[in-house]
Length: 326
Image 1 (cartoon, rainbow, N blue to C red):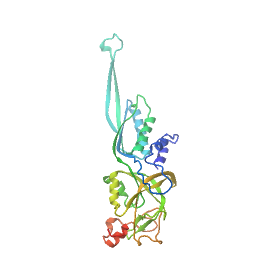
Image 2 (image 1 turned 60 degrees about the vertical axis):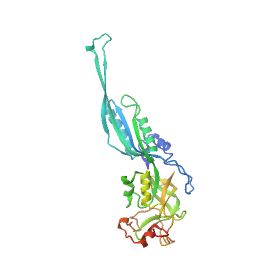
Image 3 (image 1 turned 90 degrees about the horizontal axis):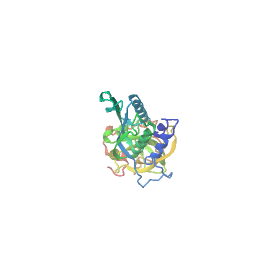
Image 4 (image 1 turned 180 degrees about the vertical axis):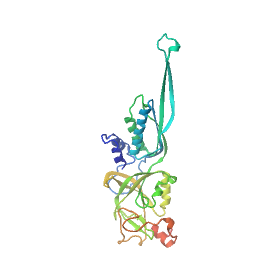
């Protein structure tokens, strides 16, 4: 989704698309088509809390056009930003004589003002930031209307972890606010994706909870969403999903889905929460298996929030699939 938005920015030029592909090696890593767990820890991308861009120019009208270009680029990349801040201008004064032997009262007074504006881009990955900065520096012309290079200050905060969600954490589902809650960490939507290995995605328990069973090569290829999150959000999700007591977080490859709903050739290694063990009541040969979950689907089994559930033990250990009561 990110790549398609970027290519749509300037249809006559492939510059930005090429730059993003070149700078996204860590985020969109190429993996084998064999659907096996990846044991080697890949090099992670970096997450920047903010990238400050400072633009200077002598002409206010020209400076305004450059700022519009920056804002449009940020919008096409679907990044968050602050409002444009206008800083105090720099005043340059020069005196020159009309002629070499002229008296001081005949000297000329020259004054130049350099206007300064700032925009801050929020919560951006290192690969995207690198592409964005190189792109704007190549497309904003040099000259008296702007500094040769915009002044940039990055605040590095954390490593980006890629997580694949397939159930109630997806956008539009009951627990989607868990992902977007800034108090539990940073989260950025990467795109829709599909597993390279078949897994049984079922709806179980009296609370209609979606489960992805760790039973490879059974069921269907599962569709979900990939998010880039920081370590704080990953720790929160581990607690939310009761990892490793009930769910187990495993690293597996997935394939991105484009805007038309078709899978692409781009793969990435992501974290997926799988159910390692379960009781016979949860899954058997008659259980309906899904490829894509929605709480409001045709199955009619609407998810029941954990805040509305009863606390009876005979249901709780079946919900989590544990062989022994928690």
